[in-house]
Length: 254
Image (tube, rainbow, N blue to C red):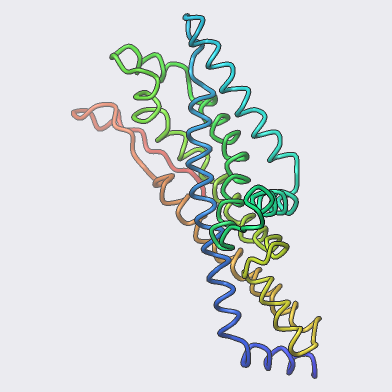
């Protein structure tokens, strides 16, 4: 019973601190995911641009694609904790000890890490679109960027939404590694609390439950959004407006 009483006491005493930690965690995770998605969209579109017939342009394309490939491989192949240390203290090393503001630094680190994963997610989503969609867009005079923005990307976004949601949930948890550079997110505040009450297990039990509530809630909300975007599973395809027999009634079990 002492354990549960300690947990209740921690929540009552430090709830404002815990809420502040939740706020910073969600801010960094959400902003980092959105910026990462923007990076992924840009890089994914660039990597799918058809190879130019002009030699100078083709060389530039290859260089840009190589840079993107290196970026993706490095940030997908190393832990975010190490990336945080290298970026944060690397900036301080270059600037004579001057460090980045912590919250913007955390958002930047999560963004570029997420962008590496989003690049491959977006590229895979673009590749999965039927080539006839591209051909149709080009046939009516669109260039690659116009075809992407107006025809391809809306379809890609719908297809990759589950992967984006998954990255967001991962980022909620992975913000905890930013405590290595002093970012004041939820895990960091957990350390501050147990340093005052000396109840390590009870404190991190509370932190664990909060993380679970956050990820569980976000997952359920995003699934509802996915369901709404997928449309109704009960619909009627009308083959003829004058012949009722031409109607095809379709029902899919959810």
